[in-house]
Amino acid sequence: MIGRLLVICLVFCLPLAVARGDDQIWSNVYHSLNRFSNNVKNTFTEEAGDSPSPTPKSHRKSSSKHSPSKKTKAKPSVSPNASPSEKSEASDKSAAESEKPASSPSTSAIAGGSGPTNIPENAAPMASIKPEALREFGSLPPPVQQLIRSALGLTERNLSYKYGSADPAEGGMDCSGFIYYVLSNAGYKDVPRDSSEQYVWVRKNGDFHAVLSRSGESFELDDLKPGDLMFWSGTYRTERDIPITHVMIYLGREKSTDKPVMVGATDGRSYEGIRRFGVSVFDFKMPSGKSNKDDPDLTAKFEGYASIPGLREPVVTSKDRVNLEQGTKSEKVPREKQRTKPLSNGD
Image 1: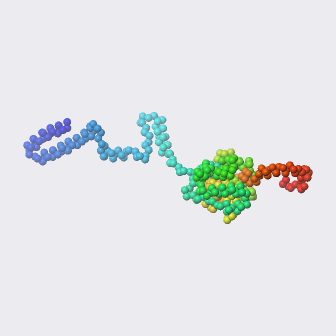
Image 2: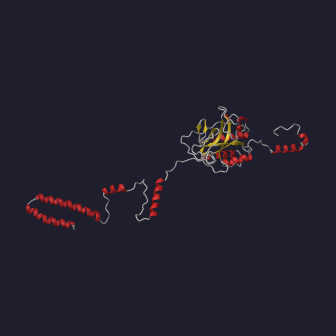
Image 3: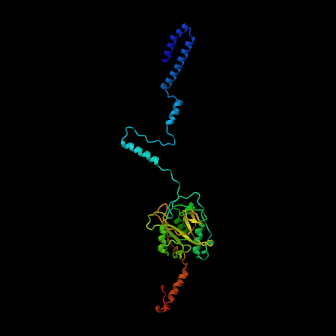
């Protein structure tokens, strides 16, 4: 249609231009009509073609400004006719997504030990000493020596503190898991897994010594011996009936420093003034009695210590037991002759 109109215009204008001899006018009219024709043709071709034409570059650039970025989450769309409850749900969902916290760093938590913790990447390596570096080691009964050797052997394996682990093959252990592993390897079949239950176990079967003092020089520590289990409370929150939260093995005193040391797994106690995170040797220091700076309701307390049931008892063979029973039967002494000396105050 447009082409026919242009042809008609040219037909009428051509004779006029030729008649007047104005070539310049004709040239201007011709070029103007030609440009007009091309523009109209391109416009109608894009809008009325059978197949959609490619988006013009100017439109692409414009649309990209309004399109959501790949990293930006699109907000849920809400219809203008939506009910107030639907609009409220969409708004709540959008707010929840925007307030969702980023993923937290990995943590190492503690079962029956010292509570959840973040282990620093630049934590000091675990410490270890040789059994011969302990002052009392040479005079200890063989079962106690073997127990200490086994415990110190674990400190040489670079084991971290790992929540819920009682197996060094997992790369780390927690405090009660360390005790469970060492005693199980020593032949104990009834060792509980939890520090609170280990406390109950020694209270029922051992000679527990309660400690009220916060001084490391207290007489209450006079009976503490290498190989004894040591118990703390208040190192982290717990809902246990008996709130024991930490346990370790006492090693005795070092020859070189005369300071008391212990062994086990923990999340930040110190040795030689440096905090260690894992299975290590640690200095034995009494808690200060001050509240936890991160949780004022928590106050760490050293509850006491106890011998491992049966560890220091002499081994009696069946032959010795028979001889002992026979000797007891053959040496029946009249009751009045048994007491040849007066009773002491303690009897």
